[in-house]
Image 1 (cartoon, one colour):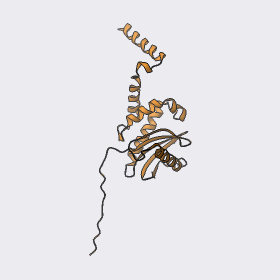
Image 2: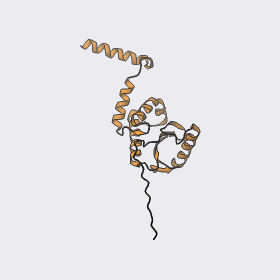
Image 3: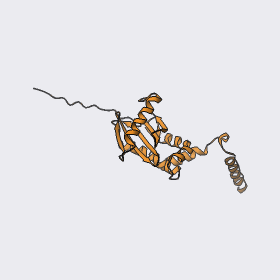
Image 4: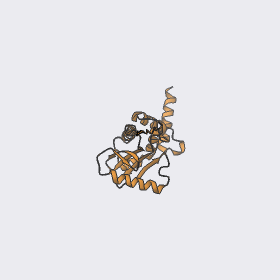
Length: 182
């Protein structure tokens, strides 16, 4: 009697869903990259992976790809390509929620002008937004309104040494105005 055994591989659920967040330009060059594990430990391997991903996705209209054993969700806008990468068994909807949150947050922060030049002028906002959405590969937030609000709050906490003279004067005017109104 032949007995067949069906072997199920149970994958432990994990909060670590995102392996990387990437933003590439029209030529496939890196504008932003944050890797949350050591799937690609060296910059050389990361750049090779980014070129491969760009070559496979920049001419297609789809939103998802399986590449090198990873699930890649992506979106393009004008001259930017946004990527969120997870493992091959990761839920695509979760990764897409991160991608949409990032894109919608940037869209609000850049006043719907999501293109290379505007992004490069506002990199600090991008860094803060990604940190609010994903931390160490764990998804923290998927609501763009909350992300934009938190980035604005953190942006207000700029140390005095990093503020422009105009910002310092404006802040002083506000404080004087409020002290006179009391």
